[in-house]
Length: 327
Image (cartoon, rainbow, N blue to C red; front, side, top):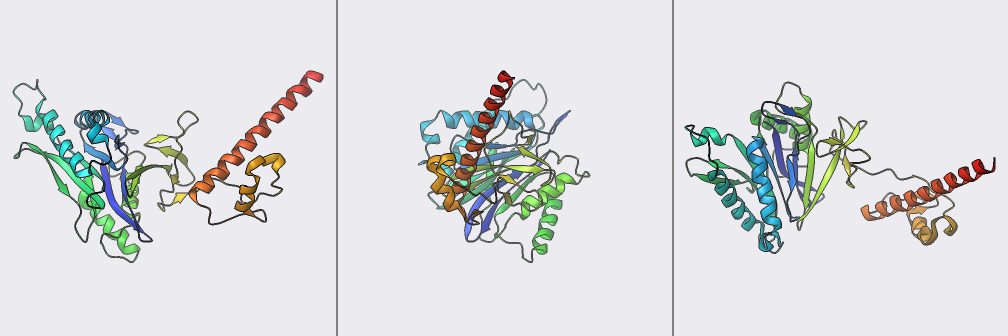
């Protein structure tokens, strides 16, 4: 099965809704790089799952397609709660459409699986999070909201009692009490349980995404198995062919690691950097990189330096070719 978690993260009086999950798919065989965390065709919500992939994947793919081609559902002016209502109706209808299982009863055929769905509700002006599963007594999908006044997190999947105990331990290490004020403690619990080989159903590289108010999703990569390891994204190693433009997180601290920027940059001249020279001088006071650059400024510095490095590389290549032809 798996372990997934979502929680309200509060830092410096700012909030974001974070989703994290392992990457293991199983069912007669084991995939260590299965996508379990999905962005929907609107940027204010996310969904992940625990349980049987043969059930969850068709349901999520139908949901993605429905939202994409429905002007009302894909419009951010439609509140998240209306998407939730549609989701439960759609999942119920799809499950009831299953046929061809002979004399077996529907409950055993359907199997065991759950979803976490959440995001930003503009009507309520806050984040909302729900756990969804099929209720056989009600003959429909039902949802439980995780938005109480003093608690905002939810685990689904395997080893739920153990994950709760580990979360309480992690909170105590930080000198806090279990409340709605989390940082990255649930993420650290998930990391710990993935690394612990005794939890055989919780495996693979962690997947991570968050929603910022008022409804903007951001997917993040993770260094794996530690900060000295490889860059990974949605359970897979980052490569030249698969190199998403995202930030990467240290799995041990939960902190976003800034992309490499030169700490010093001297002789910032227009002959080299053109119209970007003045911007770089503001970022490198007396040749030293400023400590308080914004995310956008860092991205611009990286792009400018990379562009210049590429131009200089091509010039060096051309010079080498010219020298080879004259020999």
